[in-house]
Structure formats: C-alpha cells, structure tokens
Image (tube, rainbow, N blue to C red; front, side, top):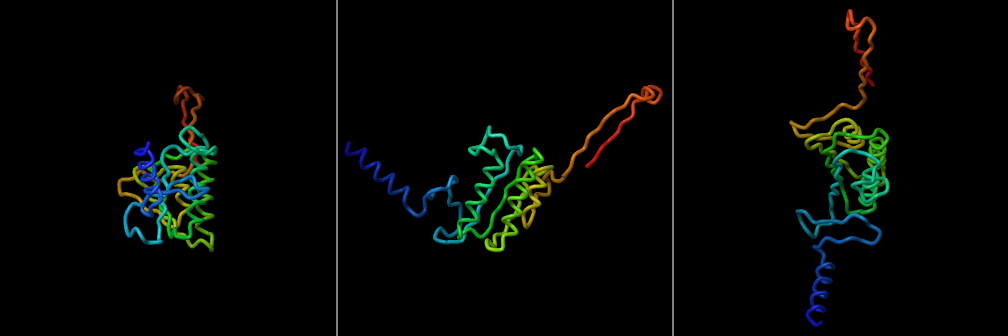
Length: 178
C-alpha cells in the first residue's frame, strides 16, 4: 500500500511539472513540448489534416469528423494567447466538397481575425490535392515539397454517347470540367 501511494504521488508530481504534456480544463487536445526553449511563452500550434476529408466520424473524436477536430484545434489555438502561429500539416487527397469548404472557412476566419494576429502556414507533405488544396487556401502561406502532389481544385466528369456507334459505331467522349 505504501509503495502504491508513493508511486501515485510521483506520477501526480510529474503530471503537474511545467515540462510535461498537460491539458487545461475544457481542452480536448493535448499540448506537447517538441523543441526550443521550454520556458518560452511563444508557441506554434501544429494541426494535422491527414486522410480523406469528410464529416464522417470513423477516425475522429468529434461528432463532425475531421472537420470538427480541425475547428476545435483552431479554437484552442486562438484562445491560447501564447500561440503565435499555426502550421497546418497536410497529407490528404481531398474529400467532400462541403467538408473541405468548412475547413477553408474556419482557417480564413482565423486568418482574417484582426484580434488574433495569428499567421497560418499550410505545409503540404506528400499529397495536397482537391479539397485539401482548397482548404489550404484559407491560410496565409502555402508551402510544399518539390515532389508533393498538389492542386486540382474542381471536378471532372466524363460521359460517353453511342451516337453513330464509335465513329461508325458512334462512341464520343464528353468531358465536363468545373
């Protein structure tokens, strides 16, 4: 019993120490010290946008899926007056149009908020295409690796008609782009 009490006191002391990862009341996302001066009050928030963008809740703690997680992390960064910049790490092929637009608008709102003065940098890693690229446009700066797959905001649809049956047979391709 004595050993258990001592071990719990040590764990409690470690959890309260300034260098440990800690969560403040009402915050869902944990702050983790990565590098730099541990005593500094200047912070950079790193938010990950990985995988397919959707409102689905399969791999998310939020009921709004990845969109809710991104918005919650942005809110937490804005409320923390020690956060000076946000890095949005992107490795996503895109996803749902409405979900991508919601992330774009959340980023743009933080970017345009005169009170926060936060700078947002979108960093495209392997893939930042379609809706992920669109979401990145809500940041102040976008950077990408030279070998990243980027771009392609929009939709493409192809359809075939069997008019004169392939030339004589009549297969013609129609492409719709947006």
